[in-house]
Length: 384
Image (cartoon, rainbow, N blue to C red; front, side, top):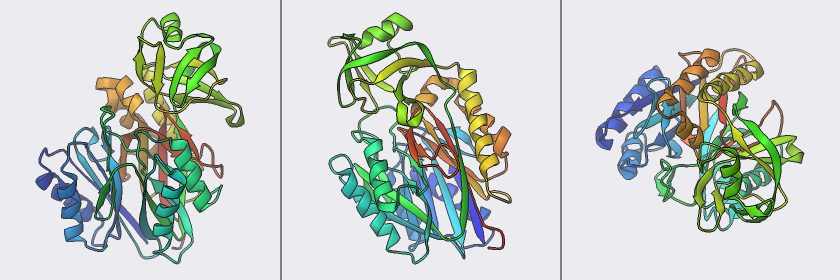
């Protein structure tokens, strides 16, 4: 048996929002006792109070999650400054969480600590990792590399980096009673779990590719020997985060998107979410709001097609904060588009992230994504 249920509240007061969301999720379990909680919360939530309310009611529950750039569920669709609580109950699947600190300084150590803590609480074989790491000041690729080193190169890892409504000041991650920053938090699902993923962006490259001639970490100084910001001036006549940079990665056979955080007109540099090495080929990427919204449906279709058997018990959604910024008042249409493929009644929880993780195809290696929507379907094998 596997039962998953979601509660969602936009009450501005944490002391009332948390019980409302929790009660809603508990009711959806139909009497089953929750083993774990996955929690996504607005950045201004009283996180200590929220965690205390959940853990006071269920002291032994395994809790993980993070702050967000906006929350998603089948209950409320897209909301900001809200609390989403997903409860997991099962007599065949174990749910264990772990945390590792110092994600920016030593991602391999942080990921190893998180995975070791989670694996040490179950004797079942892990089937899926849900990661909610720090999203500011870290390299999400290094975090994924660490998770793959700890779990296995081909082990399925999904999730999203914690966010803070594009303030870029501080995010938080939750692991049981701990509320931390600059950390990696994981939830391992172990036992006869089945799952599938879909991922799509809707973006395409604009114009020609150009060579990055000077870069340092996540800052591009020059493209084609000219100030990096000139590329945006030449193609779109504006310096806008709504146009991500497409970076061509030959080993992935295509482009990876990176969202600009800011444009420095004094130095001509572009500060991006992800590090971009010099000698990379890049071009500006563009998508209409309709194309971004339709990509959500496509991601859902991929996940439904790849689901091994039966009917999914729930869906998890990780969508980029850059997509939310581009969609503006049409953000809720992205979730509505997704329901065209996964259905409206399936328990669903998700958030807008500072970077997404999932395998791009069934049985493929988990990769990092940006400006993407990731849909993850969960269930159990027949007869369990």
